[in-house]
Amino acid sequence: MFLYDPTYLLLIPAIILAMWSQSRVKSTYAKYSRIRSQRGLSGAQVAERILRDNGIHNVRVEETQGVLSDHYDPTTRTVRLSPHNYRADSLAAVAVAAHECGHAIQHARAYSPLALRSAILPVANIGSSPLIWVLVMAGFLFSFPALIDAGIVFFSGAVLFHLVTLPVEFNASSRALAILSSNGYLATAEQEGARKVLNAAALTYVASATVSVLNLVRLLILRNSMRD
Image (cartoon, rainbow, N blue to C red; front, side, top):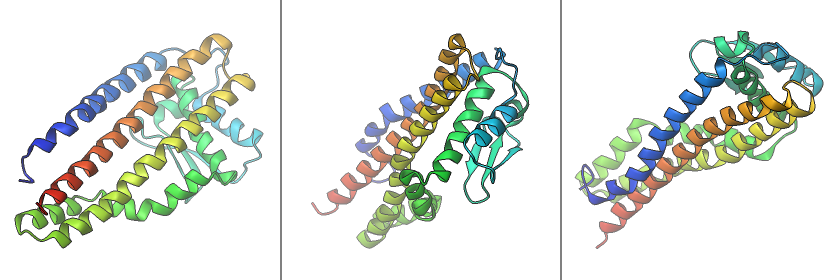
């Protein structure tokens, strides 16, 4: 029943959304990576200035490997930018750098959704582990509801993490766009490009949250069917 059942149909819209959002973020990022900002500051320079302007002096800006691997690490207080976004002065690089600094500002200002996301991260890591799905499958195969319930509890932690991530990411983008416009990092005509880059990236988080929620709904439906 668990290996193939009609509840898989619930996931189709979310999978389509996930594929479309990934395609959009790649195409949007590629487009605005080719357009240089008028001010000519690299992503790293923008990040360092934003942090300084906001009185944040204990956060480093480092280059990391990979493509779109940019992130803020609250444990080491480090903004990590992928090679292009660290070195280039494109609209995409500036937008991404400002977004990651938005997370650093959230951390410095004790933004509560960010603190909640960090708190539930250990449970979310367990809930997103492939072992959880092995646990759930074993519960269905051997008709052992306790295993299924345990898997659902841990997976719910991963779902909660995805949901809490949404306001964290939207808020970081909102902070980034406000800073880029008010502090003159981008001209008025350039701001729409930065907005499109960040909006496209936000869609990937919406898609991930949708997939996780529908997977949880599917598990609950299947678990409930065992009682019938």
